[in-house]
Length: 251
Image (cartoon, rainbow, N blue to C red; front, side, top):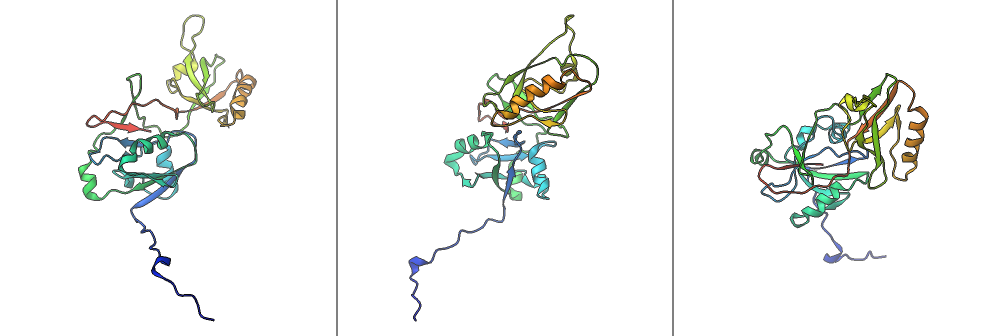
């Protein structure tokens, strides 16, 4: 029996593979840890670096990749969708979305592009709605741990996050004489940080169960010493993107 003949319209050309494109996947519900240049002349989102102690650096290293190769790279896609020059605001919103896992596609920079980018700053800043600037910290871990050994109060006020995923630090308490208590005195915990662990147990979760567990666990062991509390940086922020020369964004 004769085989059917193929016409030209049956033949399609395979999409070319760009060897400079690398995809990394973020799984932890903590900040991505990307320093992003938002005012590059190309109009595209460029990577300044993956700072030390961030999830971005850990994700790259888990793939046996040097995080520094991503300096100057362009973010071209999120979760399988690629974004063009006119879609950059949508791309930025996709990066800010706290949902995980999040797959991000990068196109590595050529040497010429690296030379054109001003990547000399050692710290990037995020412009928040209150006008303050939040600088990257060269911490060695995503989770900041506070160990309370003495029989003193924790001294932290908590409030639910907007998405109900966790409890965030909403303030600090003082003792009856106005003295600073253990957690604030430690200096590691900041306003807005999320309570992630109690004595090593993860207390984050999207369905609210872990959040309720955080309260019950604190009620159960909060008065015991030593007490270990883990905190991570908030992943939800209100950001104003200003296209001023030299401005960078931190996500």
